Image 1 (cartoon, rainbow, N blue to C red):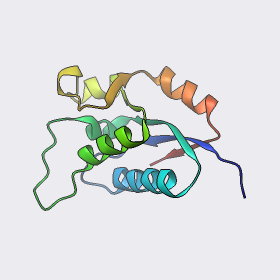
Image 2: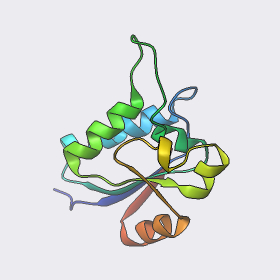
Image 3: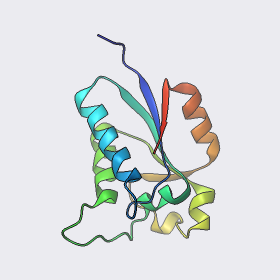
Image 4: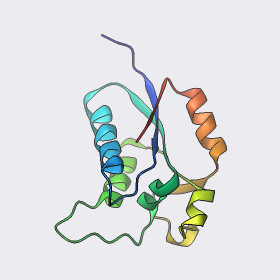
Length: 122
């Protein structure tokens, strides 16, 4: 049996329009539910910050990725960090940031990468 690894995930794709954020979510969910590995931080950067916009409103027959991230964070006590500079450029500020997401700087990402065994970018 292999030792448990710790991960930092960097999500650069928006909640809708590409598959990268959904793939990141599926990876995180599978990693946490089916292995002994851990996730220290999920960092949303560039267009990935749209995953933290509480005004995202998918159609009733679409998967609600923002809510899914929130549920995953609550279930596994995850940190969902959003790059503040990327968010400001795209109009996501504290007042429209979804629950469980927090604005932070690139220093948080750098520290997380330094402290974990693996970093994966989506």
